Image (cartoon, rainbow, N blue to C red; front, top):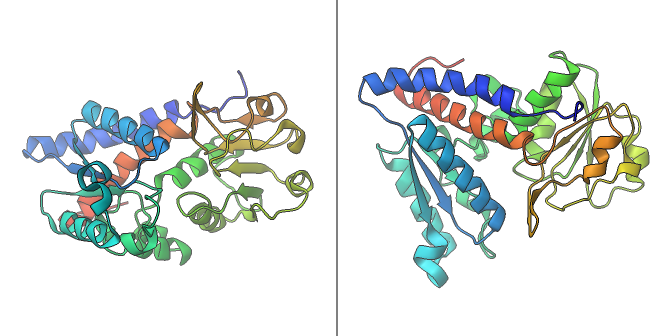
Length: 291
């Protein structure tokens, strides 16, 4: 549909830059190594890992999956996960690490991320990286790729100057909603955060220029809750018997100004930006200049 915002065109541009950097390193005989750490049986996480693996093969990045749930079973404890992240962080042959969230029941992501080196944190979720974001020091940080993807897509419709525009973020989750709130604020947007306690969501959303949803509940945002002037970015991912769907009902696209489909919207760009983060991480580790 004409109002769909697709992530692939932007992703292709990002990927060109990633390939250029990788080509230089390949001439040196250097191949970055990215490790994905799985510590749950969450189906959405496996979808993400498969996507990352496909992109790694396309780019020529070495990609390894450490499936601790399968490897350790009932022995997968907080201490075991922390030890694995410390060991990977210390390895010179590992340049990027992804801790796939959510973790298995009983494991604390905040405690785990304390043991991941922030310069190898290509998901930008360690306390050190998030602290730089909240302090408004984004150029020094590795930024979370899904919030970056959302911001890119909003700019593709609303323009590069987001100052003064209003946006509602539905879902203050640690991987998308919380960092995104700060990242949009850093660009001068007025941000309203909505959660499960928000009353009369439709009334809250009505005056907004944009709506971002990232909850993990299929069909949560309904067409009667949005307005024709809204730009809706759906950052949700839900694995259903019928395939992967977002958090917004498909009918939302019939109402609003612009809409990101799932799949095809946030996802492709997020994957590209994560590999751009890997390039940034490598440059930081090698002492090279970063933009």
